[in-house]
Image 1 (cartoon, helix red, strand yellow):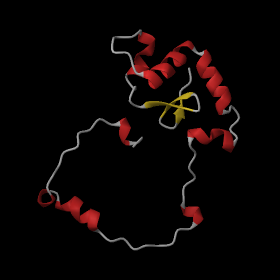
Image 2 (tube, one colour):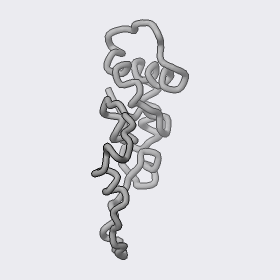
Image 3 (cartoon, helix red, strand yellow):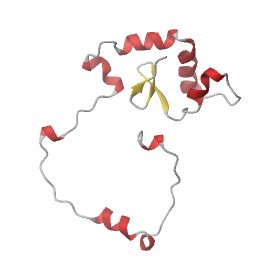
Image 4 (cartoon, one colour):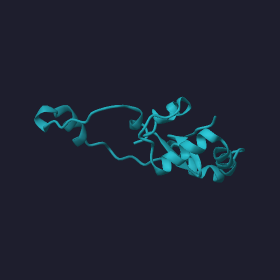
Length: 117
């Protein structure tokens, strides 16, 4: 979902008769193989940052986010709703990405990345 959130698209219904290539792919049988642990990608999630021991730490990022006047306002908007009227120019990059931003561990995130100023 995060990957698709970066794009603007329209979903259109197509009957199976008109979309036979996609229908065929969805029914294609794939042989089941045993997975080796080395084949599985390592996943790192923002809310697990304390557990993996990154130097800056989520608590420090949370504190710095709350100290920054722009990020503190953006964080509040993410949690309570975006303004309907036009906002100051300094907030424009955030309002343009309002559907892509979130709050994890008290930090503003864009997908799986921290937002810092």
